[in-house]
Every structure is written in C-alpha cells, then in structure tokens.
Length: 605
Image (cartoon, rainbow, N blue to C red; front, side, top):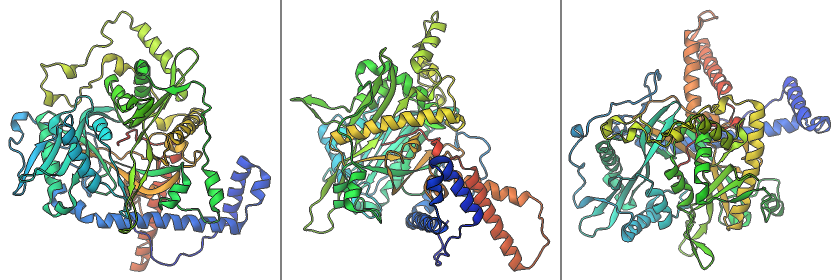
C-alpha cells in the first residue's frame, strides 16, 4: 500500500476518543496525569504518528519498487515458491514432491565462459579467507549504502561448520584463469518445525556476487545449483531471509537497536538526537550500569549442555516457526564461538552465552548474543572508514513462562519412563533402510530430545498472568545482556521483533530501525506467521499476515449481501472504497497483538 502524496489533513480527536484515552491513562498512571492530556496534545501526537507511518511505508514502497524487477523475473516464476495470485492455502505442506536422487539433474548448471564451480573447504584457511574477502567487499549494505557487514573468519567458521554440514552446500564460482573467488552461496542443515509439521531443510545464507559481475546473472544460477546439490542429498525445503521482497514472504520482522555508545552512534550517523531532547539528555538516556544484578547469572559451561538443550527446545516449541536443535547443535551455536583464551584474554570470540543457575544447581534461564560489526563506509576519499561494534540478540529461554520448571518436568518424565532404556535412541531418520530422500518428515531428535517439546502452550494463547511473568523475567535477562555487551565494548545491541522480543524492546530502550527482514520458505506452502510487528505505527501493514487477513476480509465482504441499492458509478466507487477501508480495519483488528510477542522463533545470522 503506497502512502498518499497529498497534504495531510490534521487529525481530529473526538470527545469520545479523548474520554477513552484519558480513562486508559488514568487507570495506568493516575487521574492527575490523565487530566493533563489535552485535545491539542493528542492531535499533535496523532499527527506525528501519522507522519511516522507514512515515512515507514514510503521507505518500504521505494525499496520494493527498486526490487520489483527481481520479484517479477521469470526465474522466480519457475521456482516452487508461493506466487502472487495463488489460490488461498488450504493445506500446509510441500509444493513439489520429493524425488529420488536418480531423477535429479546429473550435471552442474552451466556458467558463463571463463568461470567454474568450486566447493569451498572451510577447514582450509586460504579458502575461508577468500570467502571473507568476497563478502567484505560485496555483501549486504543498508539501503543508503552507508553500512556493510564486516565478517570475520571466526564468524564464518562458526556459521558454516554447523553439525552435519555438507561441503557441497558451500558453493563458489572462481575465475578460471586467476582463481579469484567472485561468487558464493552457502547452506547448512536445519531441522525446522512449521506449526505442527517437522521438516529437514537447508538454511541458505551469504548469497554474494562480486559487484563487477552483477550483469552476468550469476545469482539465479547459484540458487539453482545449490538446490540441485540439496536434492542430491535428499533435502527439498529451504529457509532464507532478506530485506527485499520476492515471492513470497512467510513472515516479516523489524530491526530494533539499543544504543550502548550513543556518542559514537551519533558521530557515525547511525542515530540522531530526537527532536526536543538535547545531546546530554540523550546520552543519559542510554547510560548502562557497570555491573549486572541478576542472581545466579554466569557464563555457560559445557557441563550445562543437557539442561540448556532441554530448556531451549521447550521454549522454542511455543512458536509457530522454529528450529529444532539437538544437543550437538546447541553446543555448536552457543559454545563453539566463545573463542580461545590467550594471556587471559578471549581471542576470536563470536558468541556470548550466559545462564542463570538457581541455588539447587538448576539452569532456569538462558540469554545469548553474537558479534557482527559493520563498516561505516567513507563518504569521500579523505574520510576514514569506521567500525561499528554491533552485537545481535541470539537465542534465549526462561522457565518463567512455564507452570512447571523444566528441570522438574524432565524429572517427572524420566521417572515415568525409568524402565525405558531407549530414551536416547535415535529416530527412524537414522535408519539406513529408509532412503534419505524419503526422510523429510522424520525428526533427527532422539526420543529424549523430542520429549522436551511435550505439553507446551502456544505463545498466542498464553494467559495474561503468564505473559506478565515472562515480560518481567525477560526484562531482567535483557538488562543483564545489555550490561554484558557494554562491558565488552559494543556500541549497539540489535534485535528483531521475533520470539518474545516485543515484551522487552520498549522497556530496554530499543528504538525502531529502518530495516525489515523477510523470511522465506522454499518448496513449502504455509499460511503467514506473525513477525511481532505492530507496536509502531505503520508496521502491521508490512506483515504478510496482514495481507492474508485483509484478503480474507475482502472475500468475506464480497460474499455478504449488499445492503444498499445500486447507484451511480460514483456511489459504486465510494462503496468500493468503504469496503477496502473496512477490510483494512478488519485485518488490523484481527492481527495478533504485537505486545504479546510473535509466532516466529527463528533467529538467522
């Protein structure tokens, strides 16, 4: 929906609206504060919100138009992804059926002359360095080309060497004569749960083509070739993310940023002092305590793995879209990136993972983040580039959301199954008598690991008291995470509106950014999943779930009998406009409240 370019009519606050707002404020903050709210103040606020909404939608509209050629390209029309205009989803599941390896294309897809395919060996320092150099000069920039991710070799090694990774999923393109790496795409194994269905998929990342070769149209060939390689190993679904709009997002989340070093953020142009606030007040707003005050908080150890794995699996089961990590994967994503100790200092650290241990030795909480700095690109030849030390929220979990603590639930289940010696038995996924290409829906978790997901309430139907306890605990955890990030000299802590982040973003002083991350599923048809947007004006309209609900409202309106007599073309146009407005409002009313969280439990780096 493109914002109107016409001059805005000032918002009008009716007597009814004024009374309702004052009553709400009085209930939460008292009559004295409520009485100070005037009609003029509310009118000013509403107009400011309207301007913010228009700015958000206008920015996204410009970006979407810039990427329209990509979305409309014939390549996407040939791929097993939902298309605009498809019939409503009646049943979630694969778009195309799995095929036997013998029916998969045997030869790699052809490349332009003078280029050749290579598999990147990430254990080879030189080859990993080639990937690092390609990404450093050519990968993601923000919309204004002012920031670019600055990957490290340690970061890439942590991401790409996921347990069960396949070398053939780390695909590169080299110039035959010079051996220069000019394109890359990667995939790592990813057991995914989409609502109540589990599937083995590949997480696609780091699609990058050298800037000078963008006209060679290598990106579609990279996608087709990594798809072929996945098919050869029996994987037919994928998950991937991007800021651009292509067919068709299943979820969308917005970036939020918590300033830790506000002076530096102002200097590099990452943020600005809000209107009506002076610089010193701005700096005071983002002051961070020197020490954490959360009892039992400490860095995670290998010995915590079993407890942390159980807690994380149980917590992630609450969401509609989430990964399913076995203990080996939990060890990798949370511990393998902690770096090495050299002369009392941690070198090459990528992840920071902390747990809360109670007095009886039980792990009750988990919080983690990873480092991914950005280069602030120079505006001119005389201006040096600056590094923005950014941390990104990663996975977290807490027992506060459960009626029975995880350690107690696990004890009860294990006691009931004491006679069962197969608790750690591997699933049929590892049965060699079953051909791999037929294993999409067979979980790779052990019986014990699967049991961790039992009897968990979905995020959207948790009661108010549960949400209140969860909100309180998450704010305590995130306050500690911010302190830890400050202690390690990070400039900013970034997060998305996924998981339960909306329960703490505002209280922990995260501000909305101009970046949005869309989530896509390859060869899987699914109803949209709430991405936690809607707390800020204009966000909800960018959520794929909103479009789905609006289409339902339009269809419902079309089926309803008309209550007015047929009139002129003008009145018909007016009725159509009113129907669109009703559908818009109806969809907004049906959107899950962003203040309750989101259905998206996937954090992709």
